[in-house]
Length: 257
Image 1: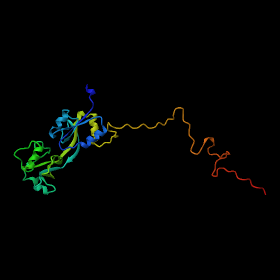
Image 2 (image 1 turned 45 degrees about the vertical axis):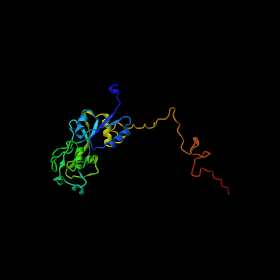
Image 3 (image 1 turned 30 degrees about the horizontal axis):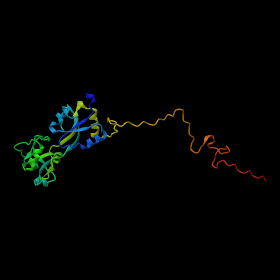
Image 4 (image 1 turned 180 degrees about the horizontal axis):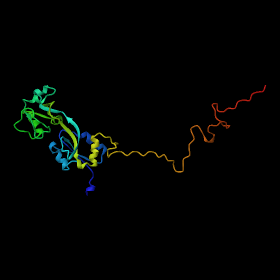
């Protein structure tokens, strides 16, 4: 099978915490003949996967290298602290970074937040992954500050989380290599931007229905008379007089006196 014979497909990468189901469903409705394959990648590996052609586009966490990638920011996540349910933080609606000063704040190697200064006290070792850090929180070793979607992804019944008002936030974007903006990438951009199937900017625009022709059929169509009129007698009485309000009746002759 040659390259031109390979059926089209679309590969979509996504990082932990992102749920692409809504956009995938719209793709399947609009482009049922083109399969979409999901590619789960770690946040730190997303750029390499896109650069090496492992996916056509991806939901990633900003920032990305804008000299190589195009990106459409989608939303900003709330940052939360994950704690055991019996922790003092659980009694508050929200906390600040200063409220964590006495806690050991775990900082996994795959952390997605851009910290200038880490809150709390550092652990002796950095956990390899966010999943490992969650296990340590459950063991009472420390607390963990992450985007809210990751707290939900790693939900446990013995843990809870609260917003951290002054922590860095994580932004999620759709990104792809700028030099590989294919027609299918444009189709997916249209879906993410909320364009309708009839949008003039999308490739999936439905063709307009042809308007009925105003030309008369071959041979010419005879003009139809107006309703209530027939032939040459239209508008006249049966005796040939002009039709009036009383139908043109002839009155009786007057008797001479």
